[in-house]
Amino acid sequence: MNKRLSLTLTLLLLTTILEACGSSGTTTSDPAPSAGAASTKAPAKAAEPVTITFMHFKSDVTDGIQKIVDQFEKQNPTIKVEVQPVKYDDYYTLLKTKMASGDVIDIFTLNAGSQTKLFADGGYLMDISDQPFMKNFEPNVIKEQATDGKNYLMPVNSSPIAVFYNKKIFKDLNLEIPKTYDALMAAAKKIKDSGKTPFALGWKDAWTLKMWEERDFPSNTGLVANQPDFFSKIEKGTAKFADNPAVKTTIEHVKQLYDYGNKDQLGVDYNGAVDLFAKGDAAMMYMGTWPLADLEKKNPDLYNNNLGYFPYPFSNDEAKNKLEFNPDASLAIGSKSTHKEAALKFLAYMGSKEGGDAWVTNTKLLSYVKGTNTNIAPAINDLKPYIDAGKIYNSQIYVANTSIDWSTQFSQNLQKFIFNKMTPDEIVKDMDAWVEKNHK
Image (cartoon, rainbow, N blue to C red; front, side, top):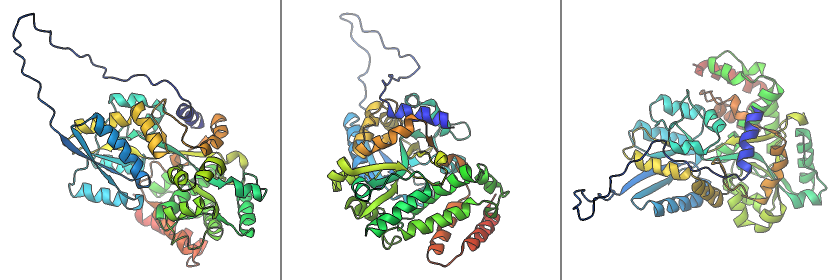
C-alpha cells in the first residue's frame, strides 16, 4: 500500500509532461466537393444551449470553483453551469433527498468508498470507466477509487491531513516539531503555559471533529492495535469495540485536544477556527490544505513566512507516525442526467492539465491530474521529505468499504464524554449495542 501511495504522490508532486489524450477511435471527414460542384451538404446546426447543475461540498473554496467554472463556460459558450455549493455537514443528507425525490443533478462531488457504493448500488451514477479523460490520472488512483470493478468517479483533488503550526510561536518557545503523540501534548502544554492557545478547534461544524476522529481512531486501530480488518468485521457484526484498545486511546486523545483547544470549541465553526489561527491566537490547527487560500488572504505574512505543516503524530511509536494523505473530492455524473454530453465535457475539462492547474491556482488544493502544478503554498514544502522518503499512508483504506455509519454515533458519544455525560466504558458499551442493532 505504501509503495503504491508513494508512487502516486511522487507523480502528484513532480511536474511531468502530460500526454495528450484523445478518443481511441478514428474520425472520418467528408471529401471536399470538386471544383465548381455545388455542395448538397446542409449547413451544420448550431449546438443548442444547455444548463447543467453542479452540486459540490467544497463550500470553503466556493469563489475559486466559480472561477474555474467561468473558464470552462468561456471555452464552451453553449454550456451554462449552475453551481450549487453546500456545506459538508449538510451535503449528503441533501444529496440523498434530491436523488430520492427525482431531482436530477448532472454533476456532483462524492467521497470514494462507502458513499460512492451507496449511490452506485442505488443506480444513481454513470459508469465513466472508459472515458478518455480517465487516462490523465495515475492508474493506481483510478483503481483505488473503483467500486465493484467500475469507476463512477473522476478524482479531483488530494490532500494531506496534518498539523499547521505557527513557526514564530514555536521559535519563541524553543519548540521542536513533535514526532510522537506525547511530544505533541508536551508542546501543547508549554504553549498553553505561555498564555497562547495550543489548538484552533472549530467543532461546531461536526465534520471537523469527525475528520480528526475518522483518522485518529482508524490509525490507532490498524497500525497500533494491529486490527486492520476491524471495520470490515464491524460491518458484519463480528467485531466488538470492547476488544479494540484504540477506542479508549481516541477517547483519551479527544479530551486532551479539547483541554488544549480554544474556548467554546463546540460553539466555534470551521471559519472561526481558521480566523483564530490566522490571527496568531492559536499555535496549531489540524486540517487538510483547504484553509490555505483563506490564510493567504487573512495573514499574508503568516502564509509566506511563518506557516509550517507537520504530520499528525497519532501514536508514541515514531516509526508509525507517517504523513496522512487522502483523496478528497471526486466528481460523478448522475445516471438520470439528460445532458450527459455536456457533463462529460465538464469532467474532461476538469480532468485536463489546464483544468487541473486551474484547480490548483484557484483553490490552493492539489490536483490528481498528472503533470499539474504543485506549488500551492510554501508550507507544503515541509511535507516533501516525508513524501520523498515514502513515509506516507492512508488511514481511510481501513474504513473504505464500511457502509455502517459508526462515526456519527462515536462522535456524539465523544462530545458527551467531553462534558462528563459519558464515561469511556459507557461509550464502549453503547457502541457495541449500536453496532449490534445496525450491522447488516
